Image (tube, rainbow, N blue to C red; front, top):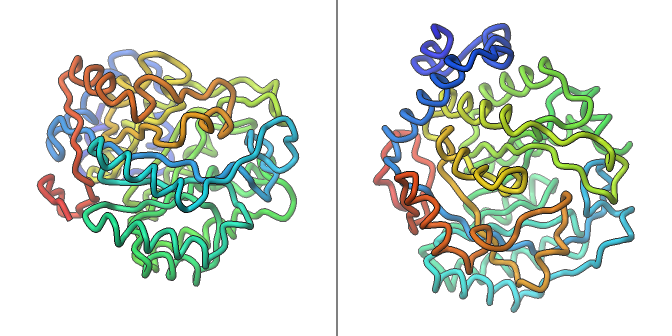
Length: 352
């Protein structure tokens, strides 16, 4: 219990201390860890959960990451790319529903050039000046990141997936490098984004020591957003027969990250809800404070298939916002429609 208290008070631990948090299976210990993280979240944000409208702009990707269902080598999925007008329609629909953050996510699609994205971002910024724009478009040049920031983007999500170089090479094809990924994250910080990173929990070949390295990296990086979710296999990948990641370990890590980074924006991801019907609410109770309902046109949601069985209907969809509110109200939490920016001063009233 002393290690939990130390993390809560100092937000820093050693490698061995982090490892002790990861391997302790005592149920009382886990209950205290979750409760401390939940208490930390409530002390800063109250029982407010921020919503982000997810728009999956393209499932084309030039890469062949071994775990990803939209990898270039997967010929079994139907590819699509939303037009500028379709993306704007998604934003308009989301705005009417109360969303004040739009997350543009896609594979590393060569057609999504800097010029095209600049045009889309600046148009969204012009039409929705009170909204935040989050991008999750993979590795780009430092110049691209700065250009998109100047066009009106506020946040960028780029999970590093694993800090360990050997482990990284087991998840990605030749030509992709951990160092490049870390360089991109540094570039995002330098460009002034609210920057998000994170890992897949239980990814193939991952060890506890790998996760400890991830914790130390994120502790040093101090990202404004931390996105983690369990690995879930996809049948169109080389990892089709690999076991899925652990919901319990993911929840434990959400609590650890909350105590490490009290003001961070931490989503209860769709992958949690895919593994378990109560995965999202358990994520909130473990310290998460963001959910991301899907604004992608319903006809395309099934094609953005990162992993098997990805949830995209009901409370996972923008149309299911009432259902989501009811689900969160049942555990004493409220959906908040403002953009919910990161505030380093822990000021939960900050609405930029």
